[in-house]
Each structure stands twice: as C-alpha cells, then as structure tokens.
Amino acid sequence: MEEKWFSVAELSNHANVAESTARRYLNKFEKYFQYKKRSKGKKYHPRSVFILEKISMLYAEGYEPEEIEKILFDEFGFAVEEEQSNDELIFSVQFERFK
Image 1 (tube, one colour):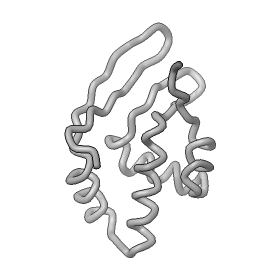
Image 2 (image 1 turned 180 degrees about the vertical axis):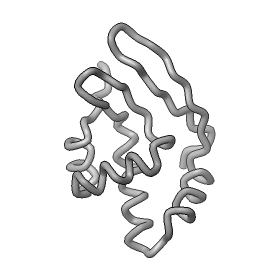
Image 3 (image 1 turned 135 degrees about the horizontal axis):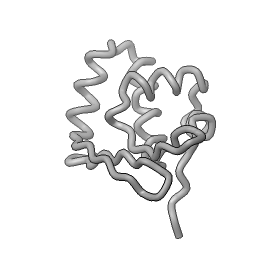
C-alpha cells in the first residue's frame, strides 16, 4: 500500500501547527522536507510531520533560525534528488542520519 502524502493543511493538522506557521517553516527549511510537486500544489512525505513538530518545538524553546538549521542538519543530514514522474515533479531528500 502506498504511503499517504499530505497537503500543507493536512500536514499542519497532524503536526498541531497553524497552517500559516507550517507554510513559513516549510519555506524556511524546505531542504529538509521531501515533497511531490503537482499542478495543484505540493504533497509532503509523512516523515514531514515529525520534522515540522521538531521545528515548532525548537522555536518554542527559544532557538533562533540559524540554530534550528544547524540542529536539523546534524540530525537529518541530506542529499536532494529531483525526478520527473508522469505529471509530477518529485523532490526527494535522502537522509544520511535519521534518529
């Protein structure tokens, strides 16, 4: 069975983060999120819920964006791949370290 990928609204709901805040985090830390780009927007990999929750928690604890970036990189080292599949563009983040 194929994994369900989430819209921004669904992702923000699962991560218990306001949709506007989720959009800001998704844009600010885009390279840490795996998504499929479709004609009607992006769909995010289920693992994105955990990453979004982590970012929200770090902000709540008073971390600055630069510090959050370093923490995310240390926890989720990445390599970005792009591929075309039918009518969608898929951006994959291959995590080298995932805790």
